Image (cartoon, rainbow, N blue to C red; front, side, top):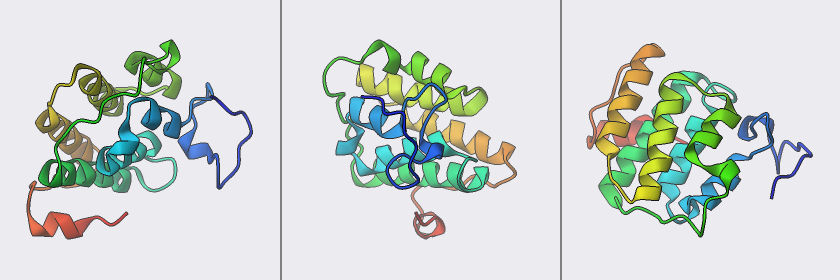
Length: 151
């Protein structure tokens, strides 16, 4: 269900594509509400640079993926069929994404549909994006990383 009224609490602009798809809808369609970590990673990729600084959002997305690998690592399953306007390609087009954000979001959503695990590739792609945004990639699985980024 796509809702057209913007509201800073219930429908903030930084979680809505220009075509009306909301981040929460994608998270629900792909079953990510069953994975706090992956749902948050998608949220931070979605809004990267729209609410907080681009680098901060990319680092947060990376932190949640690394944390997901450490504590869970299981793939949530999409809830039912994926509507045509919510396929990985359609989501990327709706958001107007290009470059690493498009590649990464597409990889995550496609991997969920195919029950594939390429989270190491997700992390490598995020590291490249972090470097491009002027940051330093993190070493996965260290205590310093776990305390580095706060939501």
